[in-house]
Length: 298
Ligand SMILES: NC(=O)c1ccc[n+]([C@@H]2O[C@H](COP(=O)([O-])OP(=O)(O)OC[C@H]3O[C@@H](n4cnc5c(N)ncnc54)[C@H](OP(=O)(O)O)[C@@H]3O)[C@@H](O)[C@H]2O)c1
Image (cartoon, rainbow, N blue to C red; front, side, top):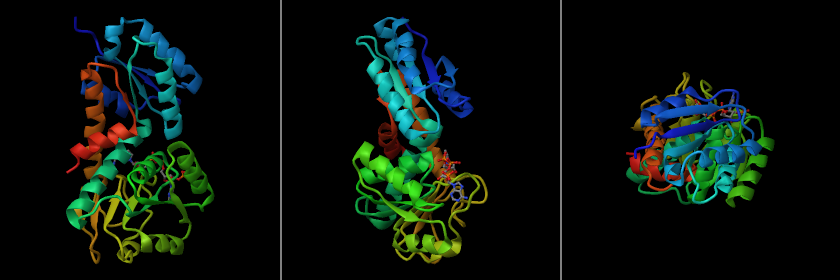
């Protein structure tokens, strides 16, 4: 018997993201149901409510999506959902808070491809500076790149205190070390850029964090990537659809938000489709997003 595919979409915020609802329905779910204001302690009960209402063989047609704007809370919710399963009553789970897991995965996959294609190297031992590092996309980008051997620096736009605390949570949770830097003045940013081989801009939409002049003086730069699609660009001069375009006066190439967004979109859609088509329940976080984004990035 063909079962309806149902996606229960949980967020700790006041509203579920229409972006995620559209993505899930377009990927093929028959029904998506938003649950807002969900706390970590609610997740177990919601999952058990979902698993026991359908026979075990329908578990694979039942999904939980975890949204919000906090990577660690989303990962804690994934663990709470995992612990609430009562085999053989199990369902699929996918976390992508504020699109950050798929966006970070897409940005890093595109950077990895550009490093290989234009500079014959990979992420390992590459100096990566992340601007917008206190945001959820920046956080996840830091974890993925550090887990793949890069020398990662979180650049704090308001000093080092907050990025130091984020670096400590990354060490505790993922056992990888990331450095921090004060990016609160133009002079300090320039010092970071002087050492960076890859610059990733994950700052708030519509905020320019790096000028073209600063980029021009980044002597070791190989790749600059920007995920902000709202003018002005996060990195001045990086066009929205840049896809390995040369950057003036450097040997670096640029990646813009629409070429990264194209892989992000396909990654999120692809993970929903994998959930729908799976023969056994699956659990996806940013690592699965990065695996798929690597296949999709060109
Ligand atoms: N291309 C795509 O497919 C795609 C998909 C999803 C998201 N995005 C974009 O990805 C970016 C990051 O998303 P997010 O959800 O992590 O964003 P966010 O939470 O709004 O902010 C990201 C970072 O920007 C910082 N910031 C705020 N004002 C700043 C300023 N004046 N100067 C420097 N940094 C500043 C924030 O610092 P505080 O912590 O102090 O606020 C935070 O570190 C956004 O531009 C978003 O539009 C792109």
